[in-house]
Amino acid sequence: MKRQYWIGIGLSLLLLACVWTLQAQQGSFTTADSASVPPPPLNPNAIAILRWYAANEVTKFNTGCSATQGIAFDGANMWVGCQFDNKVVKVRANDGVVLGKFVLANSPNGIAFDGSNIWVVNGGDVSKLQTSDGKILATFPVGTDPADVTFDGSYIWVSNTLSDNVMKLRVSDGKVVGTFPVQRPFRIAVAGPNVWVSSSAGSVIKLRARDGKQLGSFPMCLPGSLAFDGVNMWIANGECDTVTKLRESDGKTLGTFDSGGIGPIGIAFDSQYIWVANNGLSGRGYFVVKLRLGDGRIVGHFYLQGATEAAFDGSSVWITNGFGYVSKM
Image 1 (tube, rainbow, N blue to C red):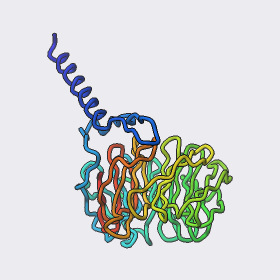
Image 2 (cartoon, helix red, strand yellow; image 1 turned 30 degrees about the vertical axis):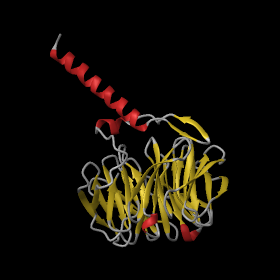
Image 3 (cartoon, helix red, strand yellow; image 1 turned 180 degrees about the vertical axis):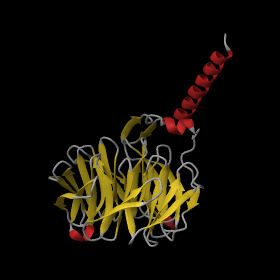
Image 4 (cartoon, rainbow, N blue to C red; image 1 turned 90 degrees about the vertical axis):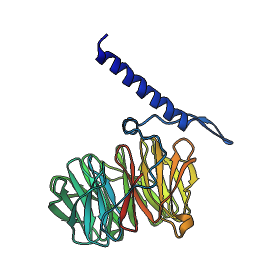
């Protein structure tokens, strides 16, 4: 037979062996109060880079900032907000090389990618940046002390903490097409046709993206970031050191789990697991944890000082922190 045929067979067997290895490492877990839970589907991106370890605990990149906060992935690069340095930093995702630092007016925080451009809240504005070179394409006034921004597939949403509202902006020209009351809004996440907002008043709010109608309000414990796993919403409860899992369709609480540290604030879904960034008040609270979707069990516990926010790039989870670097886990 042709040599190419045997090479193809060999590569297929190697890939199959790698899959078996990863499945064996993940295994099935059994707890006292739950049946055996099968491992989640394998991430083909992780397989491609031969990532069999639970998380990278040593790789971090210096952004040159005094602290890092908001973070978003544009398909090739990570964009990081440097709140105290009035700039955003563009970091190449594959090797952590800083590709650019771009000055913004005041305290950049939340960051979002709309499929073409990067949006950053800063001061009382939201700025739209060109991904290729960081050029500011436009800056649009929003409310007082905007904390976060997200993209729902059609519109940009901004949470205005001190204005007690969230705004819906048209992507093309930044025109505000809706303003909806939410008390002390903080982080935002999109879940299909709905937008979820955490409120530092002690709840998470579900809004219908089409018209901003409030569909529900659910009590939480000083909620921070939110993550949608395709079915459920996960919320970091900063004051209670827990993570809550809500069914997105009706807001029913499916579980509240230990965050594995102190002061959870950042949270991300990596297509298999939920990752939680605990900001910590001391060394005993400085941990990033990895939770199993089915029952919230901690399956990874990694020491990382001052973690703040989390984002997923398709194969690795990135964590910002209060010391000016970003970790690729």
